[in-house]
Length: 287
Length: 234
Ligand SMILES: Nc1ncnc2c1ncn2[C@@H]1O[C@H](COP(=O)(O)OP(=O)(O)OP(=O)(O)O)[C@@H](O)[C@H]1O
Ligand SMILES: [Mg+2]
Image (cartoon, rainbow over all chains, first blue to last red; front, side, top):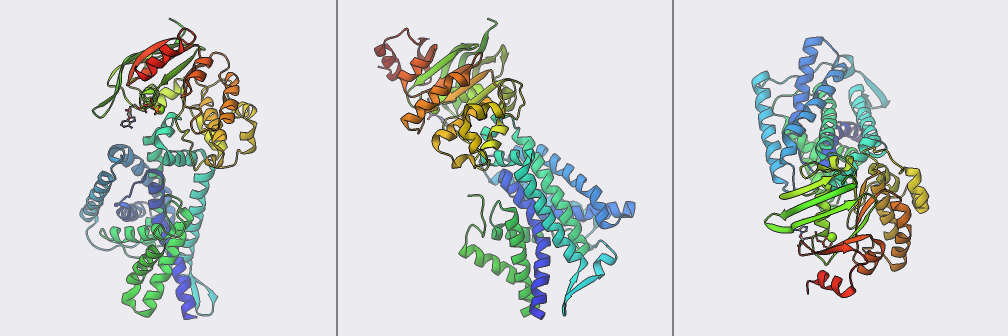
């Protein structure tokens, strides 16, 4: 039972990792941009939610109604004002710029909120659980996080494959030059993609902040989890990010079971093993 | 002239420091079919890209129905009525046949071409509409590329090497459909490697050589030898 419990909890935390990963995968798929600041945006969204909650007294989940549109708007503006200027054939400039953004964000958060760690309080949601098997209790929060991840990925999948916006994303990703002579403006398409990615970031940030303490410097490690989930699942495959997140979560859980110090290491080892066996990830869709 | 659709004047196009087009001028009237011939690397595709706004000319003018488009975005130029079937087709590989066609109509210009009309002309595309576009045969892919261009209801259609990589019977089929595709009023520039065919279908022609125009005029006004000399630069 103990092992089953470890695996179940690992699967559920995989939902959170999938939330970290989905936004990263989305913008890589559309514009081949690797956003080094992705983790810091997640943490930034957590602080934004904290500010909103302090100002309004909303429940953290309800704060998403404000945090998601705000992050989407920020994403749109950053893409149009900054990232579009550095995207091109050379992949280095956007890497450097998002790396710079990462450092700027961390320091802004440090200046604004100090290095103290914070947490969002979601009340009963955090403490209640469901006994699914003897010895296997599923907390409402991890369950909700997982369900949110599945719903979000299903939603993104629908958007990508069944809407005009998704068609524009795929066309621009396939052949940006020809997409432009269809009348699409690449810069706007990229801005939509970034604002969508940042909406996912907002959701990831709030779930993260309810689950655990956060501080201005925890972004990069969330980025790593997101990266690993994306790569394990295979580039460009949204459902793959969920599989990647789950594998990562389960590996970490199993590692921690052996020795608490092994939690993170076990996740990285699983990542490296999969990379060694399948260098393009489990279900790649992008060459 | 009220009926001039496109007027290119003294165009100069560079890729970095390499000049691909040296002072090219040409005009095309409403409803005219102009053949653009020339050997490999003559600059035909580059001229098309400049007209579409995919490359920016260093000098010269490109006037579409009187308006200079040389500094406009590709999207804006498409909205103004230019469409291209690019060399090598370049279909969107993650889009189905129908999605490729629908995207062709993204700018929403009014006109005779609708999804239904494209399917009328190319019934096989209706049958295969849910297939990934690149899963089709070469000839069918070319039909998708043509349909995609027509979906924007252009005033000026640029066709770059329709026959590239296609079997002779397929080429014949596509050319047989050309009159129906072009209809009335659509101005077309056709790039075609088969010079005899290019001359047979067009009203006028332009021959390019190393980025310059080496010969132009009515398609029936020159001998084979004159055209051959302009084509090879001998
Ligand atoms: N993207 C590019 N970058 C640099 N040079 C280019 C590029 N595209 C074309 N060229 C050069 O510009 C010149 C004209 O090329 P272009 O493709 O326009 O010729 P073309 O007449 O269409 O030839 P083909 O019959 O082979 O299609 C050639 O010398 C070519 O090498
Ligand atoms: Mg060419």
